Length: 306
Image: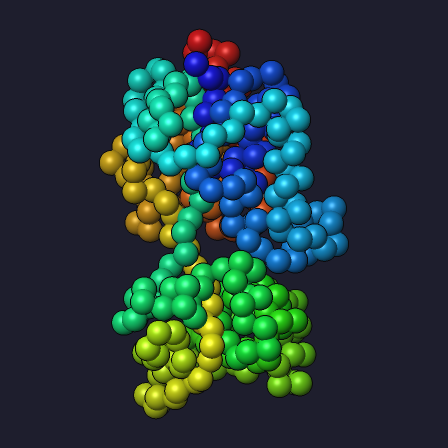
């Protein structure tokens, strides 16, 4: 039996593991794909203290290496079922069932889709939810990015060095993303690298074997415009990956896990950290903060409970 099982290997989960391992607790990390989470799919990061600029994958690898050097055990599999109500917690996976004294849910969030006809048809054939994963497939071609927050901004900055032109489609006339980054995008607009398509929503996706154009509707005058692109990057936010625990963990109206300031959920010994948790700011630095806070509280919880 482990002291702590952490589900999810993003910055929150990795930070929790580092703090717990330094306190000589045994930790098992269960990760579906590869450590790093969304950060590993991010291009340049310029708002993480200590680094003026660092590649997301590089930062993720540094975190994982630090935890591994401290003795972190990691398995790559999916969780099938949770048994969290007892004093001893059980996590069932495709690779077996594991027991622990405390669980950290660092489940992250998955990309939201447009819910437009043909969207699923063109996934991998022009539509992507990860610019840093697939951007190089569109070298010197025209692409569109949908979104108005920091993710869409980061996608545009990454793609600007690769593609011929970017159409940034946003349903409002103002952006939610960082103002400093927006100024960078406006410099690209001046030279024709980026075109802002504002007050517009995607209404249709056209093509046969692959995407060839996007039809957008202007929300003000209801006019339609067809934009010919080879790629469409969807960056309209993410939804929390809480389907397996929605009947036992208290969630808010959007499906995010509700915790107290120590990252405790409504179940003793179960914590939630990072993007899956209800909070105002979802950034790498706040994810790391969540992980550290949870680990410190868990150490105290274990000493008093076991």
